[in-house]
Amino acid sequence: MTAQAAAAFGAAADPAHESRARRIWRRLWRRRGAVFGAVVVSFFVAVALLAPWISPFDPIKADWLQVRKAPSAAHWLGTDEIGRDLLSRMIWGARASLLAGVVSVSIALAIGVPVGLLSGYCGGWVDHVLQRITDALLAVPFLVLAIALAAFLGPSLTNAMIAIGISTVPVFVRLTRGQVLSVKVEDYVEAARAVGNPHWRIALRHVFPNVVPPLLVQATVSIAAAILAEASLSFLGLGQQPPNPSWGKMLDTAKNFLDQAPWMAYWPGLAICLVVLGFNLFGDGLRDALDPKES
Amino acid sequence: MWAYFVSRLAIAVPTLFIVTVIVFGLQHLLPGDPALVMLGEDRSPQAIAQINREYNFDKPVPVQYALWVAKAATGDFGHSLRTRKPVAELIAEKLPVTIQLALMSMAFALLIGIPTGIVSAVRKGGFWDYFASVVGMSGLSVPTFWLGIMMILFFSVRLGILPASGYVSPLENFPANMQAMVMPAFVLGAALAAVMMRHTRSAMLSVLRSDYVRTARAKGIAERRVILRHALRNALMPIVTLGALQLGQLLSGAVLTEQVFTIPGFGKLIVDAVFNRDYVVVQGVVLVTATAYIALNLMADMAYFLVNPRLRG
Image (tube, rainbow over all chains, first blue to last red; front, side, top):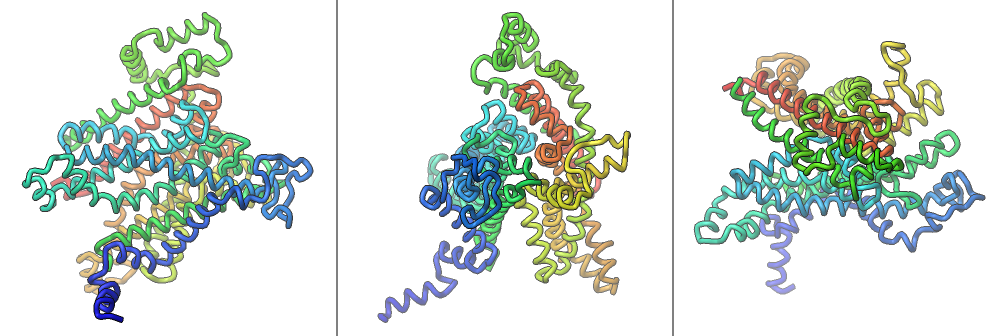
């Protein structure tokens, strides 16, 4: 090993000299809950991406000879009320759930972060007006607002994602604004202002990067909430429309066959729990790993 | 105190104004002519003229809004398109059912969440702390409607000891009402119990580190008394405020719980209205929910002000 390489290795191994990303990764890796969460989420993401190749049956095609069959070698998770393979529907349902989670949170981020940045950075009447709008959106319980929006937009997965996204916006506005308020009085921001940087540059180059870590944590936890919300809307008939598979809709159907085919109710609920738990655990771990007070 | 109340009111009033704008704006999300969409099948010229007259669709949008909000301020949210009953009457019929459900759920949440939060904080890092955090995290991850379905499967289908659905008024038959409500209330309270547990734990942890707790311990006061009389009393303040704020969130959960257990409450009213395309009812329910939430927030703020000497200055 050359002296240079040895020095580089030493720097990497020494916690005082390692990069921020590496330090966060090391902290994250040390948390069993976060690792478990990451494994669970990765598993479901892989299932969703590989759905066309790993799904054993057509998730939509009815098979009237296989109606409400209990789990067996042919149908590992059993079949539903019109003979569709539950495993295949679970696999394709993962796509709808994860897509809803990611798209809804992306919508919320795309609206909430710029609004929060503007509100916190400008202050004054702009902040006052934007905060009252945020208060108004927060005043309507999340699911009630999502139901109302989905009802007026019309029932579909796309509209459910828009409804969930809009309902999540206030969370990101509040978080971004709060972070901006604490960052904009820091010395380095004052210095950037003193040397004559324009406002947009200060907001984007000096303030925004410091807002990103808590946003990442919130986005992870919000994906979990959005997945639950999509399942809830689909359960109520306002999300994914039949015959397309969705875990929430599968549970809605299952509740009518609890006596004859209880397995129909087990798997979708279990999958929702696991994926939501995965995102929550990963989000919790990420929050701790990004906390500068954590050693 | 009045100055504080007025300052909070100065925030609540514009918020309520924006809520009314949002709720009114919902009908403009409907694709096409709102009168035609609201009417559904019956599109006779008379019916169109009547709905245009009733909801002022023939007037400019700002005028429509002003007339709508003036009516809503007097408790007139219009008539259900389906049953032709006043929306306010429908809400008044259903609300007591949901309030009973919410209060019973809150009781479950407090009874489960606060003791487990205390034990978790006192035994920090131990088995019970770990166990409580696993249960708490699971409580936050389990969908309300799935928990409801699983409980129906176990207690109603397998054991047959509780009814799977239905509602009886407590004034008609109190024991039957309790039997019908205990499972939905537990289901709705479970997620809130997890939130309460996490907040109690963190509030207790910060209080247990404070000087006066250390002093109480140094004086030789029994540990149980230190925890319950000295620490918990101060930790409870933010928890109670959180509880008041969570009542609004319980309404969200009630929508799903009432759907699973077929309880004719406020939540079922909005879902049924959505499927009947009864948009006037949807608007009324959302407006009442938001107003109640803003009022609860204001009351929680005032309660916090009254019990917190530092805010009173």
